[in-house]
Image 1 (cartoon, rainbow, N blue to C red):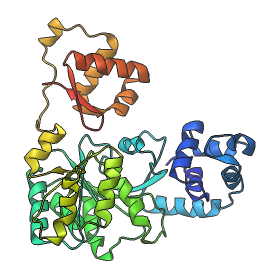
Image 2 (image 1 turned 90 degrees about the horizontal axis):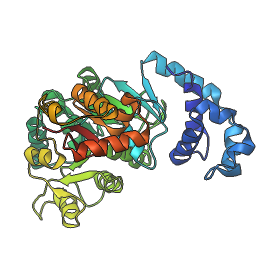
Image 3 (image 1 turned 180 degrees about the vertical axis):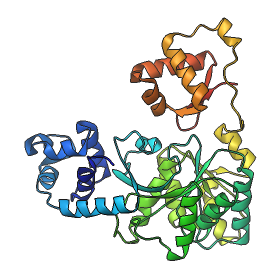
Image 4 (image 1 turned 180 degrees about the horizontal axis):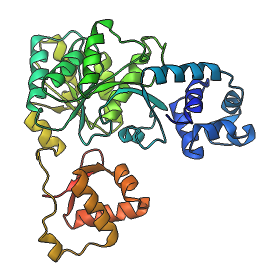
Amino acid sequence: MSPDLLYQLALINVPNIGSVHARILAEKFGSAEAIFRTPKGQLEKIEGIGSIRAKRIKDFKGFDVCEKEITFIKRFGIETFFLTDKEYPQRLLHCYDPPTLLFFKGTANLNAPKIIGIIGTRNNTDYGKQQTEKLIRDLSTQNILIISGLAFGIDAIAHKASIKNGLPTVGVLAHGLDQVYPPEHTALAKDMIRKGGGVLTEFPSCTKPDKHNFPTRNRIVAGLCDAIIVIETGVKGGSMITAELANGYNKDVLAFPGRVSDAKSIGCNHLIQNNKAILLNDAEQLLEIMGWKETTIKPVAKQKELFIQLNPDEKIVVDLLQEKISLHIDEIKRFSGLSNSNVASTILNLELQNIIVSLPGKIYRLAN
Protein backbone atom coordinates (compact mmCIF):
# COMPACT_ATOMS: atom_id res chain seq x y z
CA MET A 1 0.00 0.00 0.00
CA SER A 2 1.37 3.38 -1.01
CA PRO A 3 2.49 5.64 1.85
CA ASP A 4 0.96 8.45 -0.24
CA LEU A 5 -2.52 6.89 0.00
CA LEU A 6 -3.68 9.15 2.85
CA TYR A 7 -3.03 12.22 0.72
CA GLN A 8 -4.46 10.59 -2.41
CA LEU A 9 -7.71 10.00 -0.54
CA ALA A 10 -7.59 13.53 0.78
CA LEU A 11 -7.19 14.91 -2.74
CA ILE A 12 -10.38 13.25 -4.01
CA ASN A 13 -12.24 14.67 -1.00
CA VAL A 14 -11.15 18.30 -1.44
CA PRO A 15 -14.14 20.39 -2.62
CA ASN A 16 -13.83 21.91 -6.11
CA ILE A 17 -10.94 19.63 -7.07
CA GLY A 18 -12.25 17.42 -9.86
CA SER A 19 -10.44 14.88 -11.98
CA VAL A 20 -9.11 17.47 -14.43
CA HIS A 21 -7.69 19.68 -11.67
CA ALA A 22 -6.25 16.68 -9.84
CA ARG A 23 -4.47 15.59 -13.00
CA ILE A 24 -2.92 19.05 -13.45
CA LEU A 25 -1.64 18.93 -9.86
CA ALA A 26 -0.43 15.31 -10.04
CA GLU A 27 1.53 15.98 -13.23
CA LYS A 28 3.04 19.10 -11.69
CA PHE A 29 4.06 17.68 -8.30
CA GLY A 30 4.25 13.90 -8.83
CA SER A 31 2.58 12.86 -5.58
CA ALA A 32 -0.50 13.80 -3.59
CA GLU A 33 1.56 14.52 -0.47
CA ALA A 34 3.67 17.03 -2.40
CA ILE A 35 0.47 18.81 -3.46
CA PHE A 36 -0.66 19.25 0.15
CA ARG A 37 2.79 20.37 1.28
CA THR A 38 3.11 23.04 -1.41
CA PRO A 39 2.52 26.62 -0.17
CA LYS A 40 -0.80 28.21 -1.10
CA GLY A 41 0.90 30.98 -3.03
CA GLN A 42 2.60 28.46 -5.29
CA LEU A 43 -0.57 26.40 -5.79
CA GLU A 44 -2.71 29.35 -6.83
CA LYS A 45 -0.28 30.31 -9.60
CA ILE A 46 -0.90 27.01 -11.40
CA GLU A 47 -3.16 27.46 -14.40
CA GLY A 48 -6.64 26.11 -13.69
CA ILE A 49 -6.20 26.05 -9.90
CA GLY A 50 -6.37 29.65 -8.71
CA SER A 51 -6.80 31.05 -5.21
CA ILE A 52 -10.12 29.35 -4.33
CA ARG A 53 -8.98 25.81 -5.11
CA ALA A 54 -5.57 26.44 -3.53
CA LYS A 55 -7.32 27.55 -0.35
CA ARG A 56 -9.55 24.46 -0.40
CA ILE A 57 -6.46 22.25 -0.48
CA LYS A 58 -4.68 24.08 2.33
CA ASP A 59 -7.83 24.23 4.50
CA PHE A 60 -8.66 20.51 4.13
CA LYS A 61 -9.36 18.94 7.54
CA GLY A 62 -10.91 15.59 6.63
CA PHE A 63 -7.90 13.34 7.13
CA ASP A 64 -9.79 11.32 9.77
CA VAL A 65 -12.26 10.21 7.09
CA CYS A 66 -9.32 9.21 4.88
CA GLU A 67 -7.81 7.14 7.68
CA LYS A 68 -11.10 5.26 8.06
CA GLU A 69 -11.07 4.56 4.34
CA ILE A 70 -7.55 3.14 4.62
CA THR A 71 -8.79 0.80 7.34
CA PHE A 72 -11.57 -0.37 4.99
CA ILE A 73 -9.10 -0.83 2.13
CA LYS A 74 -6.74 -2.91 4.26
CA ARG A 75 -9.53 -5.02 5.73
CA PHE A 76 -10.92 -6.10 2.38
CA GLY A 77 -7.68 -6.34 0.40
CA ILE A 78 -8.55 -3.59 -2.06
CA GLU A 79 -5.96 -2.28 -4.50
CA THR A 80 -5.74 1.42 -5.26
CA PHE A 81 -4.33 3.07 -8.38
CA PHE A 82 -3.36 6.76 -8.34
CA LEU A 83 -2.82 8.74 -11.53
CA THR A 84 0.96 8.51 -11.31
CA ASP A 85 1.15 4.80 -10.38
CA LYS A 86 2.75 2.41 -12.87
CA GLU A 87 -0.20 0.01 -12.49
CA TYR A 88 -2.81 2.70 -13.23
CA PRO A 89 -4.87 1.76 -16.33
CA GLN A 90 -2.84 3.50 -19.02
CA ARG A 91 -5.72 3.82 -21.51
CA LEU A 92 -7.51 6.12 -19.08
CA LEU A 93 -4.57 8.52 -19.18
CA HIS A 94 -5.39 9.23 -22.81
CA CYS A 95 -8.71 10.73 -21.65
CA TYR A 96 -8.77 14.36 -20.55
CA ASP A 97 -10.59 13.54 -17.30
CA PRO A 98 -9.13 10.28 -15.92
CA PRO A 99 -10.21 9.21 -12.42
CA THR A 100 -7.81 10.53 -9.80
CA LEU A 101 -7.88 7.36 -7.70
CA LEU A 102 -9.30 3.94 -8.51
CA PHE A 103 -10.34 1.18 -6.10
CA PHE A 104 -10.10 -2.39 -7.38
CA LYS A 105 -11.00 -5.79 -5.99
CA GLY A 106 -9.83 -8.63 -8.21
CA THR A 107 -6.92 -9.98 -10.22
CA ALA A 108 -7.62 -8.84 -13.80
CA ASN A 109 -4.92 -6.96 -15.69
CA LEU A 110 -6.39 -3.51 -16.27
CA ASN A 111 -3.62 -2.90 -18.80
CA ALA A 112 -4.36 -6.08 -20.76
CA PRO A 113 -3.39 -5.93 -24.45
CA LYS A 114 -7.00 -6.36 -25.59
CA ILE A 115 -9.97 -4.85 -23.74
CA ILE A 116 -13.52 -4.41 -24.98
CA GLY A 117 -16.59 -2.99 -23.30
CA ILE A 118 -19.98 -4.59 -23.90
CA ILE A 119 -22.96 -2.41 -23.03
CA GLY A 120 -26.67 -2.26 -23.65
CA THR A 121 -30.15 -1.89 -22.26
CA ARG A 122 -31.28 -3.16 -18.87
CA ASN A 123 -34.42 -4.53 -20.54
CA ASN A 124 -32.95 -6.68 -23.27
CA THR A 125 -34.79 -8.89 -25.73
CA ASP A 126 -33.94 -12.51 -26.56
CA TYR A 127 -32.14 -11.18 -29.65
CA GLY A 128 -29.87 -9.03 -27.46
CA LYS A 129 -29.14 -11.93 -25.11
CA GLN A 130 -28.32 -14.26 -28.00
CA GLN A 131 -26.04 -11.75 -29.72
CA THR A 132 -24.16 -11.02 -26.49
CA GLU A 133 -23.65 -14.68 -25.64
CA LYS A 134 -22.63 -15.61 -29.19
CA LEU A 135 -20.16 -12.73 -29.46
CA ILE A 136 -18.41 -13.69 -26.23
CA ARG A 137 -18.48 -17.39 -27.04
CA ASP A 138 -16.82 -16.67 -30.39
CA LEU A 139 -14.18 -14.51 -28.66
CA SER A 140 -13.33 -17.18 -26.10
CA THR A 141 -10.14 -18.24 -27.92
CA GLN A 142 -8.81 -14.70 -27.66
CA ASN A 143 -7.03 -13.23 -24.64
CA ILE A 144 -9.57 -10.42 -24.20
CA LEU A 145 -10.73 -8.65 -21.04
CA ILE A 146 -14.47 -7.89 -21.04
CA ILE A 147 -15.66 -4.69 -19.31
CA SER A 148 -19.23 -3.75 -18.44
CA GLY A 149 -21.24 -2.05 -15.71
CA LEU A 150 -22.73 -4.95 -13.68
CA ALA A 151 -26.24 -3.62 -14.35
CA PHE A 152 -29.31 -5.69 -15.19
CA GLY A 153 -29.74 -6.75 -18.79
CA ILE A 154 -26.90 -6.78 -21.32
CA ASP A 155 -24.23 -5.94 -18.70
CA ALA A 156 -25.01 -8.96 -16.54
CA ILE A 157 -25.38 -11.22 -19.59
CA ALA A 158 -21.91 -10.13 -20.77
CA HIS A 159 -20.34 -10.79 -17.36
CA LYS A 160 -21.97 -14.22 -17.03
CA ALA A 161 -21.08 -15.25 -20.58
CA SER A 162 -17.47 -14.19 -19.99
CA ILE A 163 -17.22 -16.36 -16.89
CA LYS A 164 -18.83 -19.28 -18.70
CA ASN A 165 -16.37 -18.99 -21.59
CA GLY A 166 -13.26 -18.49 -19.48
CA LEU A 167 -12.69 -14.80 -20.19
CA PRO A 168 -11.85 -12.38 -17.35
CA THR A 169 -14.49 -9.69 -16.83
CA VAL A 170 -14.53 -6.49 -14.78
CA GLY A 171 -17.58 -4.56 -13.60
CA VAL A 172 -17.21 -0.79 -13.27
CA LEU A 173 -19.37 0.46 -10.41
CA ALA A 174 -21.13 3.75 -9.66
CA HIS A 175 -20.64 3.38 -5.90
CA GLY A 176 -18.17 2.24 -3.26
CA LEU A 177 -16.87 -1.31 -2.85
CA ASP A 178 -18.72 -1.79 0.43
CA GLN A 179 -21.83 -2.80 -1.55
CA VAL A 180 -23.00 -4.19 -4.87
CA TYR A 181 -25.72 -2.52 -6.91
CA PRO A 182 -28.05 -4.01 -7.83
CA PRO A 183 -27.81 -6.25 -4.75
CA GLU A 184 -29.11 -9.17 -6.83
CA HIS A 185 -25.68 -9.22 -8.51
CA THR A 186 -23.67 -9.70 -5.33
CA ALA A 187 -23.02 -13.38 -6.09
CA LEU A 188 -22.13 -12.52 -9.69
CA ALA A 189 -19.59 -9.91 -8.53
CA LYS A 190 -17.96 -12.45 -6.20
CA ASP A 191 -17.81 -14.97 -9.03
CA MET A 192 -16.19 -12.39 -11.31
CA ILE A 193 -13.51 -11.76 -8.69
CA ARG A 194 -12.88 -15.50 -8.17
CA LYS A 195 -12.62 -16.18 -11.91
CA GLY A 196 -9.83 -13.70 -12.68
CA GLY A 197 -11.87 -10.55 -13.17
CA GLY A 198 -12.95 -8.02 -10.59
CA VAL A 199 -14.89 -4.90 -9.72
CA LEU A 200 -13.57 -1.36 -10.17
CA THR A 201 -14.72 2.08 -9.02
CA GLU A 202 -13.48 5.60 -8.41
CA PHE A 203 -15.88 6.04 -5.49
CA PRO A 204 -14.77 5.43 -1.89
CA SER A 205 -16.79 3.25 0.48
CA CYS A 206 -20.17 4.50 1.70
CA THR A 207 -20.81 6.20 -1.65
CA LYS A 208 -24.36 5.34 -2.65
CA PRO A 209 -25.35 4.45 -6.24
CA ASP A 210 -26.94 7.85 -6.80
CA LYS A 211 -28.27 8.66 -10.26
CA HIS A 212 -25.60 11.24 -11.08
CA ASN A 213 -22.80 8.71 -10.44
CA PHE A 214 -23.72 6.53 -13.41
CA PRO A 215 -22.68 8.91 -16.23
CA THR A 216 -19.45 9.44 -14.28
CA ARG A 217 -19.00 5.65 -14.13
CA ASN A 218 -19.71 5.35 -17.85
CA ARG A 219 -16.68 7.45 -18.78
CA ILE A 220 -14.45 4.84 -17.11
CA VAL A 221 -16.07 2.06 -19.14
CA ALA A 222 -15.51 4.10 -22.30
CA GLY A 223 -11.95 5.10 -21.47
CA LEU A 224 -10.75 1.74 -20.20
CA CYS A 225 -11.48 -0.14 -23.45
CA ASP A 226 -10.03 -0.35 -26.93
CA ALA A 227 -13.56 -0.65 -28.31
CA ILE A 228 -17.14 -0.36 -27.09
CA ILE A 229 -19.75 -2.82 -28.36
CA VAL A 230 -23.37 -1.67 -28.12
CA ILE A 231 -25.74 -4.64 -28.24
CA GLU A 232 -29.20 -3.15 -27.72
CA THR A 233 -30.28 0.30 -26.55
CA GLY A 234 -32.96 2.90 -26.92
CA VAL A 235 -32.12 6.31 -28.32
CA LYS A 236 -31.59 7.64 -24.79
CA GLY A 237 -29.88 6.17 -21.75
CA GLY A 238 -26.56 5.14 -20.29
CA SER A 239 -25.40 3.11 -23.28
CA MET A 240 -25.81 6.08 -25.62
CA ILE A 241 -23.91 8.28 -23.14
CA THR A 242 -21.09 5.72 -23.01
CA ALA A 243 -20.97 5.49 -26.81
CA GLU A 244 -20.75 9.27 -27.11
CA LEU A 245 -17.99 9.36 -24.51
CA ALA A 246 -16.09 6.62 -26.34
CA ASN A 247 -16.30 8.59 -29.57
CA GLY A 248 -14.98 11.63 -27.72
CA TYR A 249 -12.04 9.57 -26.47
CA ASN A 250 -11.33 8.36 -30.05
CA LYS A 251 -12.27 4.79 -29.20
CA ASP A 252 -13.80 2.39 -31.70
CA VAL A 253 -17.56 2.08 -31.25
CA LEU A 254 -19.41 -0.83 -32.85
CA ALA A 255 -23.10 -1.67 -32.70
CA PHE A 256 -25.29 -4.60 -33.63
CA PRO A 257 -28.11 -3.45 -35.92
CA GLY A 258 -31.71 -4.38 -35.32
CA ARG A 259 -35.05 -4.17 -37.08
CA VAL A 260 -36.33 -0.62 -37.47
CA SER A 261 -39.50 -1.65 -35.63
CA ASP A 262 -37.62 -2.87 -32.52
CA ALA A 263 -37.57 -0.23 -29.78
CA LYS A 264 -34.47 -1.77 -28.18
CA SER A 265 -32.49 -1.39 -31.42
CA ILE A 266 -33.34 2.24 -32.15
CA GLY A 267 -30.23 3.51 -30.40
CA CYS A 268 -27.90 1.08 -32.20
CA ASN A 269 -29.44 1.93 -35.57
CA HIS A 270 -29.14 5.64 -34.76
CA LEU A 271 -25.43 5.31 -33.95
CA ILE A 272 -24.78 3.42 -37.19
CA GLN A 273 -26.88 5.78 -39.32
CA ASN A 274 -25.05 8.83 -37.95
CA ASN A 275 -21.58 7.30 -38.41
CA LYS A 276 -21.04 7.12 -34.66
CA ALA A 277 -20.67 3.34 -34.68
CA ILE A 278 -19.53 0.66 -37.09
CA LEU A 279 -22.20 -1.89 -38.01
CA LEU A 280 -21.09 -5.12 -36.35
CA ASN A 281 -22.11 -8.57 -37.55
CA ASP A 282 -19.96 -10.98 -35.58
CA ALA A 283 -16.78 -11.65 -33.61
CA GLU A 284 -14.70 -12.32 -36.72
CA GLN A 285 -15.48 -8.83 -38.04
CA LEU A 286 -14.59 -7.32 -34.66
CA LEU A 287 -11.22 -9.06 -34.64
CA GLU A 288 -10.57 -7.89 -38.20
CA ILE A 289 -11.42 -4.26 -37.40
CA MET A 290 -9.27 -4.27 -34.26
CA GLY A 291 -6.32 -6.00 -35.90
CA TRP A 292 -6.68 -8.93 -33.51
CA LYS A 293 -7.26 -11.63 -36.12
CA GLU A 294 -4.07 -13.51 -35.26
CA THR A 295 -4.39 -15.64 -32.14
CA THR A 296 -0.65 -16.23 -31.92
CA ILE A 297 2.13 -13.82 -32.75
CA LYS A 298 5.28 -15.12 -34.36
CA PRO A 299 8.51 -13.57 -33.14
CA VAL A 300 10.80 -11.88 -35.61
CA ALA A 301 12.42 -14.67 -37.59
CA LYS A 302 16.09 -15.23 -36.90
CA GLN A 303 16.76 -14.96 -40.64
CA LYS A 304 15.67 -11.33 -40.58
CA GLU A 305 18.55 -10.49 -38.29
CA LEU A 306 20.93 -11.41 -41.13
CA PHE A 307 19.52 -8.61 -43.27
CA ILE A 308 18.35 -6.02 -40.73
CA GLN A 309 20.81 -4.43 -38.37
CA LEU A 310 19.05 -3.13 -35.25
CA ASN A 311 20.55 -0.28 -33.30
CA PRO A 312 20.68 -0.68 -29.47
CA ASP A 313 17.34 1.10 -28.86
CA GLU A 314 15.57 -0.91 -31.56
CA LYS A 315 16.92 -4.15 -30.12
CA ILE A 316 15.57 -3.23 -26.66
CA VAL A 317 12.06 -2.66 -28.06
CA VAL A 318 12.11 -5.80 -30.24
CA ASP A 319 13.30 -7.92 -27.30
CA LEU A 320 10.47 -6.52 -25.17
CA LEU A 321 7.85 -7.38 -27.78
CA GLN A 322 9.25 -10.88 -28.22
CA GLU A 323 8.78 -11.39 -24.49
CA LYS A 324 5.47 -9.56 -23.93
CA ILE A 325 3.74 -10.26 -27.30
CA SER A 326 2.15 -6.77 -27.39
CA LEU A 327 2.62 -3.59 -25.38
CA HIS A 328 1.04 -0.16 -25.02
CA ILE A 329 3.43 2.69 -25.87
CA ASP A 330 3.46 3.75 -22.21
CA GLU A 331 4.51 0.23 -21.21
CA ILE A 332 7.30 0.31 -23.80
CA LYS A 333 8.55 3.56 -22.27
CA ARG A 334 8.38 2.12 -18.77
CA PHE A 335 9.98 -1.27 -19.47
CA SER A 336 12.65 -0.01 -21.90
CA GLY A 337 13.95 2.85 -19.78
CA LEU A 338 14.27 4.94 -22.96
CA SER A 339 13.28 8.59 -23.15
CA ASN A 340 9.94 9.57 -24.72
CA SER A 341 11.66 10.95 -27.81
CA ASN A 342 13.84 7.84 -28.23
CA VAL A 343 10.81 5.55 -27.94
CA ALA A 344 8.88 7.59 -30.52
CA SER A 345 11.74 7.58 -33.06
CA THR A 346 12.54 3.91 -32.42
CA ILE A 347 8.93 2.81 -32.95
CA LEU A 348 8.74 4.86 -36.15
CA ASN A 349 11.94 3.28 -37.50
CA LEU A 350 10.74 -0.23 -36.66
CA GLU A 351 7.38 0.41 -38.35
CA LEU A 352 9.12 1.71 -41.46
CA GLN A 353 11.20 -1.47 -41.57
CA ASN A 354 8.00 -3.56 -41.15
CA ILE A 355 9.40 -5.12 -37.99
CA ILE A 356 6.51 -4.00 -35.77
CA VAL A 357 2.88 -3.07 -36.42
CA SER A 358 0.56 -0.76 -34.52
CA LEU A 359 -2.81 -1.83 -33.14
CA PRO A 360 -5.69 0.37 -31.99
CA GLY A 361 -5.09 2.19 -28.71
CA LYS A 362 -1.34 2.81 -29.30
CA ILE A 363 -0.48 -0.86 -28.77
CA TYR A 364 2.40 -2.44 -30.71
CA ARG A 365 3.39 -5.98 -31.61
CA LEU A 366 5.95 -7.68 -33.85
CA ALA A 367 4.99 -8.11 -37.49
CA ASN A 368 4.45 -11.66 -38.68
